[in-house]
Image (cartoon, rainbow, N blue to C red; front, side, top):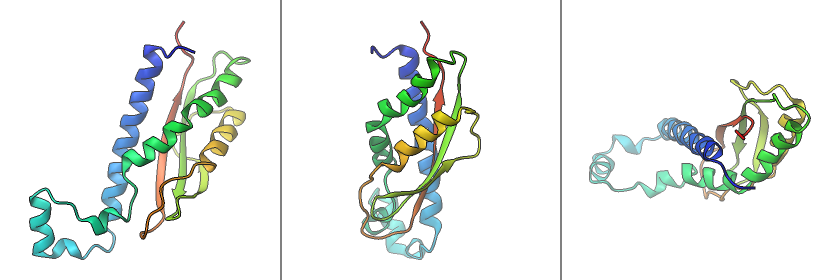
Length: 157
């Protein structure tokens, strides 16, 4: 299957949406219980472009999340393509909400708010693929919640 410009644009849009969401989630996560931000040392390090490695270890980087999901993108897209063969007008957005444990395992996978995908077979198939993902393990931190959007529409001929 040759990638079309429309499918590549769709993938880039998806990556941009994930980037925005993960940035927001990372900012929210770093606000929780972070007493180091009040110290002068942390402030100076941040201003100088340094990295607080202790904080960075508590959440997954947005690129790590995108990289893992991208490995399954073909299988996830096939969930939609299979049903599309019998329903050529099928399209919609599926927001998948899930938690990433510190072990890297995925839990709490469900259809998230803002989803317009009505086909139950597509939804179940995509959710099953997301459940099978394994993210990099983190040494410490809390469960990281992700809302990942997939926009499904027929490819232009």
